[in-house]
Each structure stands twice: as structure tokens, then as C-alpha cells.
Image (cartoon, rainbow, N blue to C red):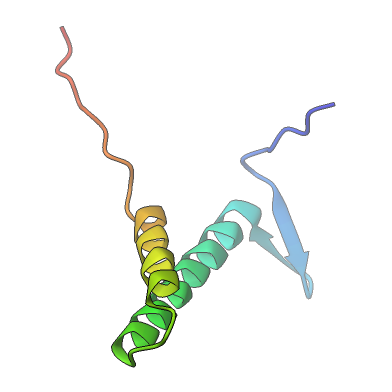
Amino acid sequence: MEERRSSNACWTFLGTSFPKAEIEYFCQFLLVYAIAVTAIVNLSLHSHNTELWVSLLSSAIGHALPSPTLHRPDE
């Protein structure tokens, strides 16, 4: 059975209710930018695994940037 996500799902922590979607968004945001900063630092320090850090950096940037969309005028 497929589990459906509700838009009003909340997590309770210490008696306070938090929106699940917002918590997931901010955790992903922090993780992606932490990876990007780590990759930039290691590239600037001339780490031995430059291919690894360039790949991680480009993946993080690709995940952080919004997908392009084509807006067509209504006909």
C-alpha cells in the first residue's frame, strides 16, 4: 500500500508541533550547503581528491538550484 503524504503533517517535539515539510526542507538545505562549503574548502586547500570534491560540489549546486521551466503564454 502506498503511503500518501498529507500537506498538514506535523512532528511534535517537546510539546510543540512543527510542520514536517518545513523541517525536511531546512534539513536538506543545510545538508546541501554544508557539502558545498566542505567541497569548496577542500578544493581551495588543494586536497588530493579533486575529482571527488568537484563532483560533490557540482551535485550540491545542481540540487540547490531550481529546475528551469518554460513559461508559455496562455493561448
